Image 1: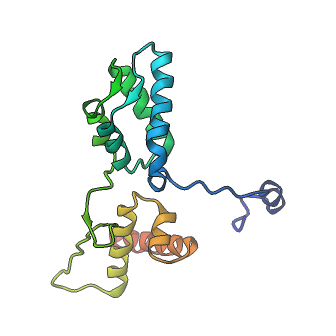
Image 2: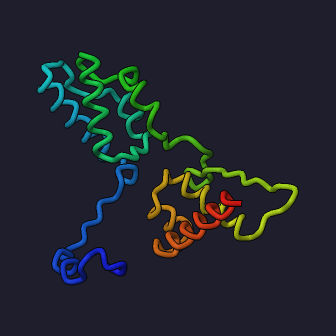
Image 3: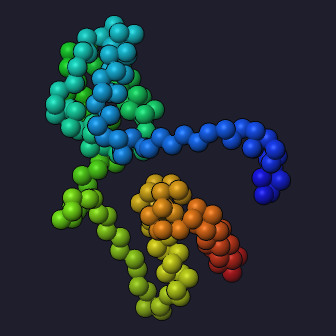
Length: 180
């Protein structure tokens, strides 16, 4: 709207309600029931024998962060049913699926039980300006959140608008360095 690319009156006409659906990694208790539903759906469609999920496979599914959320989980169950025909989903069925997903148990656990990621930032001999160091921090947090700017802004306790402004400044500085 601010750039004039979207009409203000249309925005307010469409903005009737706001629904927030947390990512699947924040609703781990829903992963196995959703996976069972998708597994049965695809097994029926493809005439395969899958009817349930073993407890070990369920634990493995719950450990994944599922950055693609429900769609990624659904596609994973579709792939498993396509590749295998069994009665119960086992961990070996998921080997290829979980290779691509981030595992929540990676990283060190703190005393409070939350996952901590460690980032090591370089300290070059020539030194760094505070802007350069801040850029490294922002980039590291952005990478840790797989490019998710909303999660990055929340983690850094800044507004999304402020983060976008900082990212634009970083791009401009990097473009200036490439021209030199």
